Length: 291
Ligand SMILES: Nc1ncnc2c1ncn2[C@@H]1O[C@H](COP(=O)(O)OP(=O)(O)O)[C@@H](O)[C@H]1O
Ligand SMILES: [Mg+2]
Image 1 (cartoon, rainbow, N blue to C red):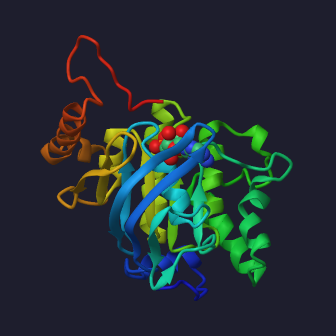
Image 2 (tube, rainbow, N blue to C red):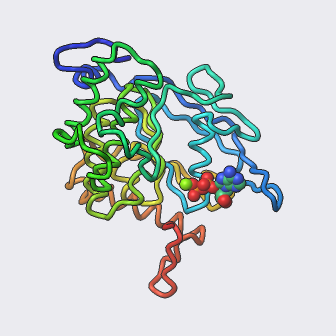
Image 3 (tube, helix red, strand yellow):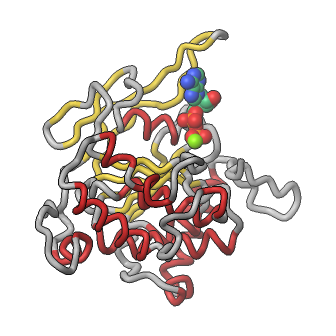
C-alpha cells in the first residue's frame, strides 16, 4: 500500500494498517563490479544475483572490504555496475534512484540545522507537498525514535545514538518503499547498538519499507532480518542466503534465547570458519569481520 491518505492517526499509523507489499521487487541480475584504480582493475563484486521482495528486511553480512557498500551504491544507482543490471520493479537502474532512503555508517547531519529541519531536508530537496503532512510525519517519526522534545536541538547537542536515530527519521520522512542502511550502528557502543536495533525494528514494523541492511555483526543480522545474504571476502560473492522465518516477530529479548537464534548464529560462524574468515579457535583468535 502506498501511504497517501492522511488520517488523524497520522501517516505512520496508516502505513501500519497496510500490508507488507509496499513498493517493488529489487532484482540484482548477474551484477559484477570492477573499479579502475591507479594500480589496475580491482574486482569488488563477483557475478551476483538475488531478489528482495517488498517489505522484506534483508541483511548483507560479510567481512570488511568484501563489497557491501559497493552493493548499496550499485543498487541505488549512485555508481554503475560493470556487467549485469539492477532492476527496481520494471525499471532498470542506470541513474540515481530517488524513491529510497539511505542511512550511512556515520550520520551526515547538517550541524547548523535543527533536528526537525535535518529530518525535513529530503522533503525540501524533493519539493514534496503538502509540507504540513510531512512535518506531521517528521514529528511522528521523531516521537517513535524517542526524540520528542529534541526537535529544536542542534545535532551537536545529541549523543551518537540520538544522531543516528535522526538520520533514520530523515531517511524515512518521505515514506520511501526502500531503505538502504550501510552499517548504520557501526560507530555506536554495544549497548546503544542493541537499543538501536529494537528502535529500528519498531519503526520498520510501522513503515514496512523494504530494508537492505549492511552489517558485519552476526547477531545483529540474525536479530533483525527476514533473510541474510552471507558474503565471501573480496571479490564478494554470495556464500549462502539464510531464511530466518523460524524466528517469530515481533523480535525481543526472548528471541535471543530461542534455539533457532543460536542455530543461525552458529551456521554463519561455520560458514566463516570454513572460509578462513574466522579462526574458530582460541589461539590466534582472528576476527576480521570487524573493521
Ligand atoms: N571508488 C573506489 N575506487 C576503487 N576501489 C574501491 C572504491 N570503492 C571501494 N573500493 C574497493 O572495493 C572493495 C570493496 O569495498 P567496499 O564496497 O567499500 O567494501 P565493504 O563495504 O564491504 O567494506 C575494497 O577493496 C575497496 O578498497
Ligand atoms: Mg562498507
